[in-house]
Figure 1 (cartoon, each protein chain N blue to C red):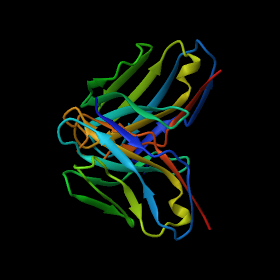
Figure 2 (cartoon, chains in turn yellow, purple; figure 1 turned 180 degrees about the vertical axis):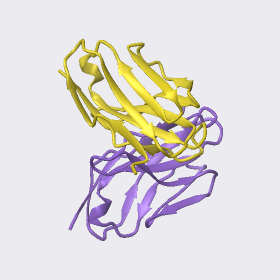
Figure 3 (cartoon, rainbow over the protein chains, first blue to last red; figure 1 turned 60 degrees about the horizontal axis):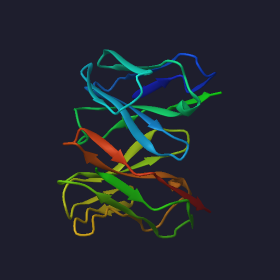
Figure 4 (cartoon, each protein chain N blue to C red; figure 1 turned 45 degrees about the vertical axis):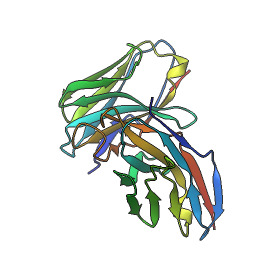
Length: 114
Length: 112
């Protein structure tokens, strides 16, 4: 009965490949997010969606393309992976748009690009 | 832009010691302030929050007071346990509450 689930948990791939990370939430929340956490634990928002509509795109390279087929899912597709993409990617959701409500995070996907 | 500054870690304490993790912020307007905790191998969880000046957030023995005059939101706990070992993130709401801006996190290590 995991609230926010991401798959896969670990992803190891070579430069230039294309990969996807999936996220699903069963909390009935309207808003979902992708955050990137680098090796120094710095956490930065990448995207947010509200009811399948893109709300925030934080100057992320267009190799990153989020897709929200419905409000319970927000997937992240990454083209032409680069070494600098290695990080932990967290999906999160909240009941309403904005930061007044607590964010519920998934357990993260550790991406390693070699 | 809005930002959050946290003390560098790791903070290493013995069980039952007093904990303070400093957090200061820069913001226009009146943001809400949060502390999130990340246990090993897990995502972040909300620990506590405060939405206006002089509010005190508290949870699981942790407390933080929103101090507008010093732009601070320091996290405190009177007696830490080994199970409190984690990374703690201070955050503020930004852009009309559209998103959270996180600090760099402070790792806490508590030994028996």
